[in-house]
Length: 276
Image 1 (tube, one colour):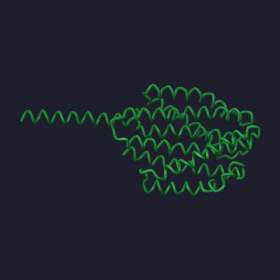
Image 2 (cartoon, rainbow, N blue to C red; image 1 turned 180 degrees about the horizontal axis):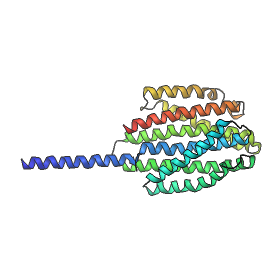
Image 3 (spheres, rainbow, N blue to C red; image 1 turned 180 degrees about the vertical axis):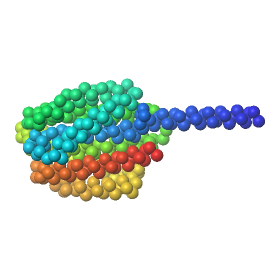
């Protein structure tokens, strides 16, 4: 009888320890890894959204919605950066967040200045470095998750990768509008900006194909992917016009914001699956 009780207690202790390990491995501090990947991925998008809004204001499009977009994006970026710094434990993640913070202080000084052509050129020089550093943070958070979950099925790792890919579409939507705007503002560098615009288009288009065949797609995700496909179709059928500036800037602005909104919803749905 004693042996049975001892065996039972041992099993319970092992079970509790294992459940505790699972709980810790799914968490990035006080939030889940899925949430951390989503938030850090959103930082990439916000870096491009702020840059785009600043250029549009410098171009003379002084709509209140654009001013609001710039201000809200700035506050959200700062708040989310604080959340990530607070919850980070990995040295690699901490280092990448420290680099983001350093670049952010320089970037913030420009986007809070009065929008003009000269400062817009500074934005074009700064935005990609901030974006790359934000992306490094996403990759390091993903790697930290993979390390902590190496004894689990690959399913969880694949899902975190899907969250990253879907979240990246938000950034690419905003980057597309940013460089479309830049090609019309800076003719001297338009060839370089068109090349970046073409790369953004290709990456976005390829990622849609990958997401469409994901085994994690629910009916709701598939329906929302259908929405993004209908929005994206105008660029698919006229890629040359996109590169040559044939679209009205207002149409690019509206469509890319709609794409960002849709992929934000899709990314949240993938995150929900990961947290269940």
